[in-house]
Amino acid sequence: MSKRSPRSQQEALLSLLREIRSDAGLRQVDLADKLGQPQPYVSRYESGERRLDILELREVCEAVGITLDEFAARLDQRLK
Image 1: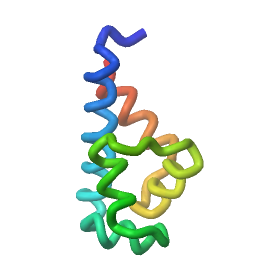
Image 2: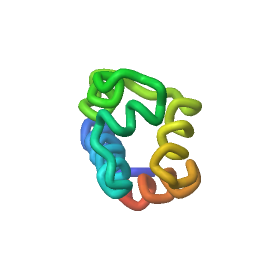
Image 3: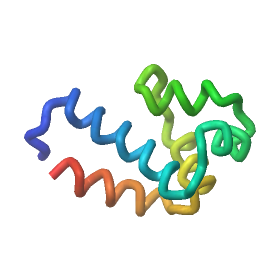
Image 4: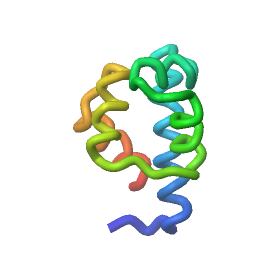
């Protein structure tokens, strides 16, 4: 079990969400277009204002070219 605070864990998640978008060479508006959403959708979940459910997270991962498993593994590494 992680010894990081819930706030620290949330910050790690948000950082990873921004990183996977950036690594894919996408701006928020580009990713939003791929998801069929307005740009504020991406901004809100990247800032923590909105949370993604697992199906939405899967769509984000597909849009940036990684698997949900890869995302989970990368998040797990950050939380250790």
